Length: 355
Image 1: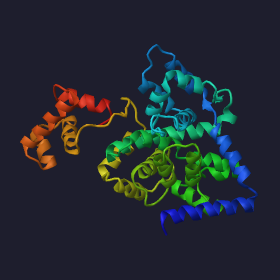
Image 2 (image 1 turned 135 degrees about the vertical axis):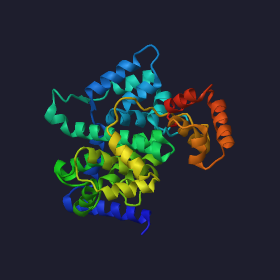
Image 3 (image 1 turned 90 degrees about the vertical axis):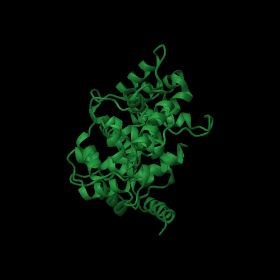
Image 4 (image 1 turned 90 degrees about the horizontal axis):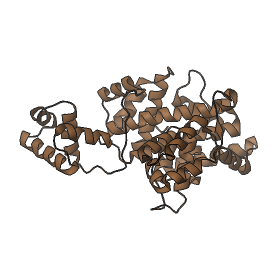
């Protein structure tokens, strides 16, 4: 059966389940509206507004503050994708911030409802659990995207933040316990239980909502496919990051499943082991760049060798190239990015998110 056929069958099952449970189109629309208006963490909004009020706020810092809270990201992405943006669709938070400007961001988030985990522990538990998991998967997906050299990593970050938004919709429709994982249940087992019991899973429901928000199709598709066994690209990166996050939390996760997903991304066992060891990331802050990388794949490979402390001869052996070819690649790197030596070249590339 084709992917389109699977999606059609899933949507048909959703309508059928709605009729059986008395959950019609009206209740689904109401659930979508409730989730769309989800509150932001009060501390996250406070920090974002503080950044926006600085004399010359950094777009990178503002973007990172937004990506620390799912509700903030949803509000900003919806505002920037209303059809009036520079190209009609804004792919990532950084691009949305540049379009809306700091004043627009501050004005927009100022009207959002908030929750405080200290003042409202019971009321906020669902939203805080969702926020923390989304941010953790975003961090993991960013690292996996770097290893797999995936394009459009700003869009990947948004997709990872929103990957479980369908669970909030199902929680409104069917109750908290049916929408979230049970103890001892892996992410894939949970998705299968949703399909078995509800006739639908949160990945497809989330993708429907994301499309209603008008966000780019690359984001909706990644969310829709992130529990598929044949997921590729962004969807596979999110699936692997989700498994890594659950593994770090002590949840049951199949090592073979992680190997299979990593393999679909051309990440070898050493790379997967590195991700598992590093998570959660601490210390140096990783930054992505919306600026396209001007380097070819071979130039990046040579520069990556420099970053790992190799000399020209070692890089040549690693890449099966001549030393003179490696030297040419690196001279091209220095020229393209304006570096005067190898150390500066590595620092520039890492700061811009190319390594």
